[in-house]
Image 1 (cartoon, rainbow, N blue to C red):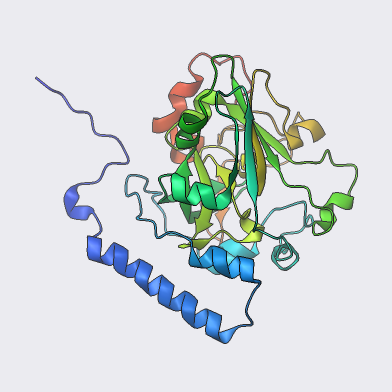
Image 2 (cartoon, one colour):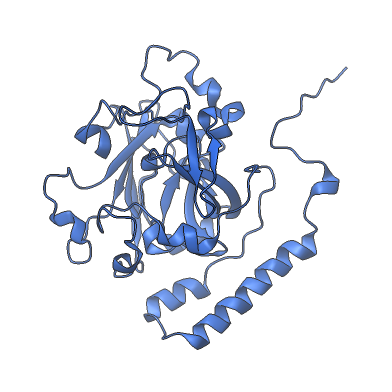
Length: 316
């Protein structure tokens, strides 16, 4: 007899959003974008082209965040991106970032290294929308409808070699448009990393858009990485290189202060940051404080990744 154990992300068919509403929402967004373009000054031609070619993506209903989506304005005007400055209001400065043309080199221990343009990825990868939580190590959080594709699809395309154990993510460093790079005491460029098992997990997502639109510079345009069970600093923004390597990479914040920001950085409400509690978080846009969940509520999907790593410092 087949015994079926339901997963936490599954929904009964009766709760699925009707198809006409899903695609109707996309059409409505397209109309809103067109109206906005008529009311504001036109952007650079490259940016307009990127928006015009941005694919419609159907929402993957398996990944329910269990919370309301954060308002778009809140999610796009309260950001950490130290290349543009250390305060949260860097969204205006970030608009100088050119997002086309843009390429991402995938190299290292792979059979088929390649340099992809972002537009190549938009055409070649299985694009979908996923609504994920994001929990910052600073104890605030938001919920965002990201557009992108699972990193497992990229791994399949490049063919990891058996000696590849980790992925190393490198963020762009453009001094002409990133004033934060003048802070020479930081170990630029911004580097992050994860194990190949973590990267292959179904939740690991390469993000190219949010709220049905191309990703904005302050949110990591044109492509960023997101693993929703980890603290937000693990999500490398504006990626220019993804390398598969045999040795564990040292991440940006780990290089600065390893006692506070470790390599693993999995969310755990019971493990405090050395300077503040992680037991609760402030919800962006509402100011409400809610209890933090272990693995940010995604333990069902990822806890098994760490079964034999009890001696590691798994929490930031």
